[in-house]
Amino acid sequence: MSTSLTPDQEALLERAVASGQFTSPADAMAEALAMLEERLAKHARLKRDIEFGLNSGEARHGSFRELAAELHAEWDREQAELQGRATIKPAAE
Figure 1: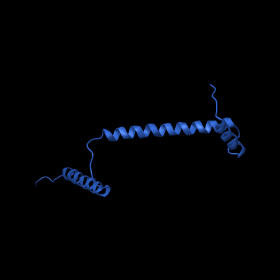
Figure 2: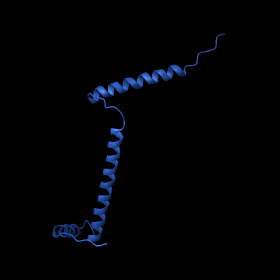
Figure 3: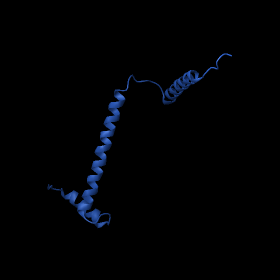
Figure 4: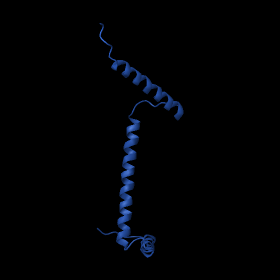
């Protein structure tokens, strides 16, 4: 595959090599492609997370502190229920 670079892109590669950050324009291009790959992966994760959020159910409204307190209270109630079920009553003598 071959591609053409703009004069500004060529100058950028030359500056990157001249600064000592890269040993060749090919090394700089490899780094640029690795950064592109990382960006595309982040975009895919973000898109997946947004879809998950949209499909996760009804939205709750309120401040973060209010929602956190509500979720904490729900957790406490569930834990109390579980502990109540796990209690084994001694057999009557």
